[in-house]
Image (cartoon, rainbow, N blue to C red; front, side, top):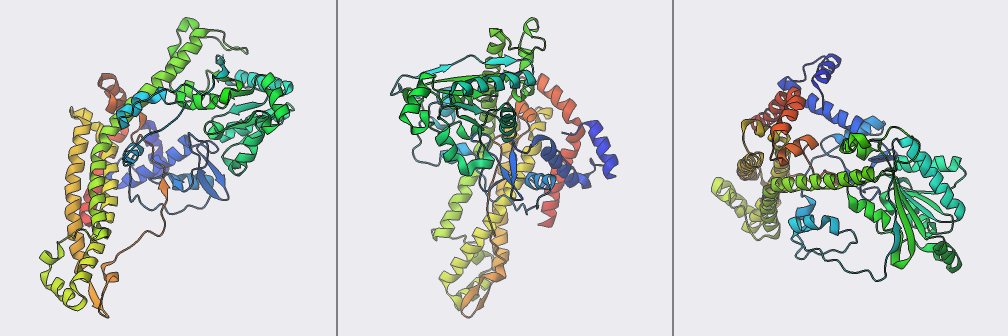
Length: 539
């Protein structure tokens, strides 16, 4: 977000006043460019391969096929990396994952990491979490975290630990947070004389071969979250003699180089060791300079009297480890509260989506007719029916109505984004943002449905009969030339706005929001209303 000083600097560079109503598009583009430049990192959030930007899934570590960022962010990243900028298109449909899952008549699942998310499974899906005992007792040794004051000390200890295990002949799986980290660590180990296999989004085609060798004696595999779940690493790499040797050394040794926001991701990485009753061990190496620790101010949770000064050795203090684990639970709780708040925002939108989908399906299946053209233009309707037949006219009306409905729904989703963009500012007026959001999108939905009828009639009036058949090209119908999946965060608000929306104690939140958002508040509000006014004027 631009600060007041940032606004002034940008005004000087661009030679405009960004807060002016006619500069709202430039302001939006500037925010998108800042997002691409500062928040999205190459080899962490995406990779560049064969002249294209490919997104990396945060939880699986794999390339997400046919997935793009929306709202101009994809184009900004493409421009940043100097690759061809592809047309963005527009969002034709949107559904949160929680609502998508609820479309299934029956929902169930099985995972070894469900317990930390049991409350969320029940809140969103009404599912009860039941724990089944394992087929064989777990023999994995989950060792305490090793915590360092700074990253360099952590990396030195990490390399020494991996090299020692490798020298003993014990296979090691190292879980890293990004593509860049996995490759940097592999290079550092190679300089130490330890050869390792790298498994990340760049090498996804070799995944099966790399995993097949990961349990061999002395194997070192450095991976992103690709190896964090759904991966069975066989001790000894299917060699019975090697299996006995590896088991005698303690089995697979899993090392994590960072803590994740979710304990489930960490537990999934641990779970690569000690499978099916095999021996194994896991341990995390952490520094107080790690992204998670700094982003959430975890160091501030440690009592001042226990905060260590920079040192090369590990911090031998259980309180430090305890506070890091507690911070992870707090972060999970905060994220859950934000998701519950966002659920309240998405409920009404999903109800509207179901109504639109039901009407669209009824038209496509011939189960219902718009029944607006006969009343609005009876003479034209009868003339077409006389030349092409009643059924052909009704079929053409349904086809036009589907096209108008698709176009109007896409515009409605864009309007919802505009409303959502500034809805948290309703707190300033003492109003409930959720209530105001629902009121505004209900009014907008009513306007949209009326617009569908109007556009259907307008297109219908342009129809003619050619060779005894209705010429639909006269209606200006259009289809998408290609479709792809957009990656949309489950939190469409900024983190600060999310906290404000979810908060019941507003004094601190409003004060912070006022300080940080004041320079853009006027520009945001003017921009939203300008786009709505311009859209109405155009229509």
